[in-house]
Image 1 (cartoon, rainbow, N blue to C red):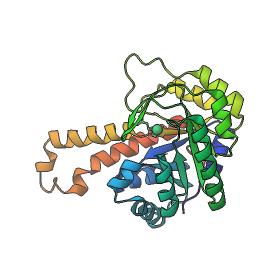
Image 2: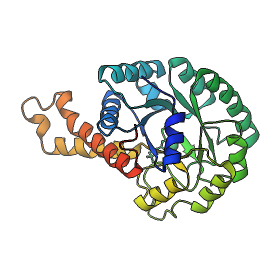
Image 3: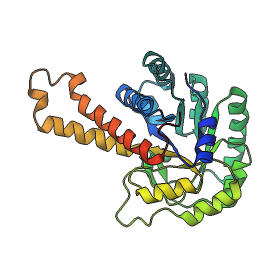
Image 4: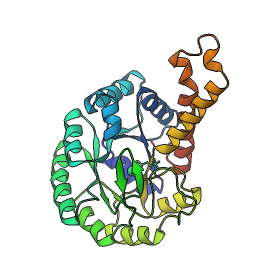
Length: 287
Ligand code: G3H
Ligand code: ZN
């Protein structure tokens, strides 16, 4: 059964660990992440970008697939199905499709418009028992067509959004989607501390979880980050394992071309990446 992300994130913030948000792209991704969370007894969030939702045949297909998988694989750890970087329209589509959680990314709007739209979605998600993530200060880089300027969040704007009653807040703190460039300056803990001072106990979300050094992850968690988003790292691990399989000519041996065999090393690589992240984030055994 799907749950909203509110409880798991409040517990994570209190317990000083973070719940992993892993983006899904298809059946292999969803199965790998769910099975690994179950194996590690960890709460988990499955993130779905609008592009990935479209790729999988629409949000309803995604919601039905994830619900069916949690039932048939007897997943008992808390699982939230969450729209990632949603548009205003995308949020309504996911509410209708049966997601348990949504992110409204209004960071590219003027703050007054971000506040207005987020406020409307707070009322709706509360009435439906769903959780809502909002964003202030754009995350840098590009994810699935969503391009962010990469500016650090204004703590007062964070407070204006947090006070609306959202359940989690993504604040730009120098984090970037995709691989970090060699000249990356690192996370701005100064911004994170200033945001925390304004929003109190609000669980904070760290996007762009791929490639952030372990010490920075731990420090961010100690300063109130309770949800960490990882997407690119699973994709890179999947691609590398699949490339190795093909370069070794295994697809040409026997029935090695069967997709169930061809996709197996990549699937294992996703599981291994998720295992490492859950361990690093400290959410193993917290279900
Ligand atoms: O919203 C999803 C993420 O922020 C993932 O970022 O692709 O850099 O891991 P990443
Ligand atoms: Zn993101």
